[in-house]
Length: 138
Image 1: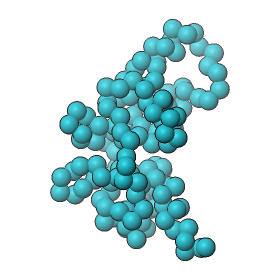
Image 2 (image 1 turned 60 degrees about the vertical axis):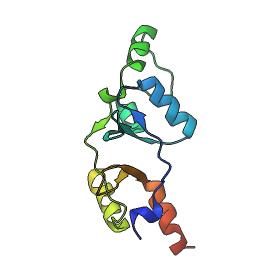
Image 3 (image 1 turned 30 degrees about the horizontal axis):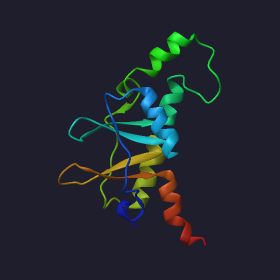
Image 4 (image 1 turned 180 degrees about the horizontal axis):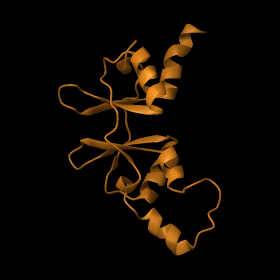
């Protein structure tokens, strides 16, 4: 089993100049936890996760900081909080290697890039891995 067998192909992305508020809205609306960050032209330059946003101070409970400060942080570009130079895999990367990489690097999702073009063709999250192996235990 390879990345292409379990990846999500319809990948939501966000531009590196988008705001944190836009990213929060996208994550919430789509009910996802990871967003590849792309440059103009579509090249991947980072990953943004709910964990990155929590580390930046955005939590699910009300914040006690002044409104002006919170609004300023919400208008910051996602490039200020994303993980730069994300680890990636190819469509032919074995699921065993994906799991090892996720565990070793402590990441919950990996962008899948076409090895020839470098184009983003999918994303593999830990949920995709679990869904992929579930039939073996059913």
